[in-house]
Length: 380
Image 1 (cartoon, rainbow, N blue to C red):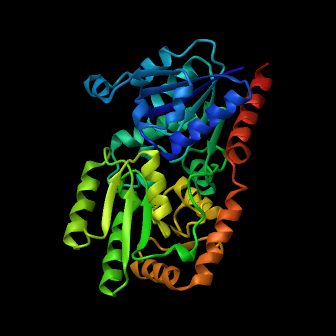
Image 2: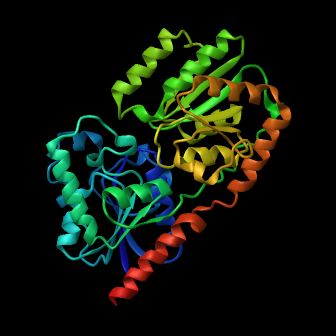
Image 3: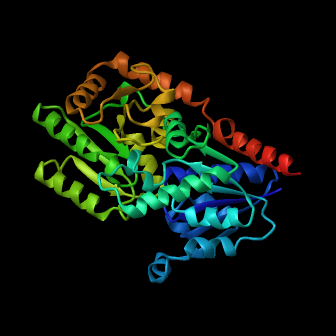
């Protein structure tokens, strides 16, 4: 059995890329023959551990990608993958053409969908303007989905969406959590000076950083000494980054809100260790790996009720779950963490405890390997 793990790009540090990384590591540890394939691989911009694997890619630099003709990228990527691959494990979107090529060759496919393809205008891709092109793409995807062996998703609401919009059953495989031993265990006693709130995620409009900026503005006006640090790649949605930077200046919170961009591991650890709370108020985010990474260090986490991660969380026990657009709720949650030592420490202790059970091997990688093996056994 030989697997091709396929992801659209490896030039960023995102949840999908962490998912791919942990799966590849598990396959390697279990002596499963596999290849890792992508359109673009820039090793300095993604997780360092990918360097352990041989990676098949069309482009090695973004400059090469910018110069290229993109209409045949999916077909070209398929054509450079070894012919002896038995099962293609395709991760997330922008690979519809690749899937079509694999189906045409009669290959077995396991499609990991973290967000429905853009054409469906669902979840983070929700839009009011529906184009004829999207309608035709949607029909093509539904037709392809009929022939795909297994579709996996990372949260129950995406299972429901796949079944509703793509007319195909899906299996839920939750993502795991990395335990970062460089992060300290947080407690109320660490609070010293400004109450430091940390948020993280590639800058895209559904991150809803606006709500956090408005919350900082209100709290500062009320005399609460708070600050906000944001970690996240700023290269993808330039307009959104510009909007957030402008908002920081207009609200006069530029002394208390800092955008760090994508940081290295040392800076990442320092920012996490200096924080007093973590906020993840995304709108319609399918999962939210960052939530669990923060919780693993006992960093009390404020999370929106539209984030998939809440399926495994408990209000006021291991996290604080709220409406991402409700600035009053966000401010109230922050103030309670700033002033209630028992509440703070109870959430810190419980979040660190439960996350230890959410390993990548247990929740995701072992289950994905079982799906590969079942498909292999059926065709042999």
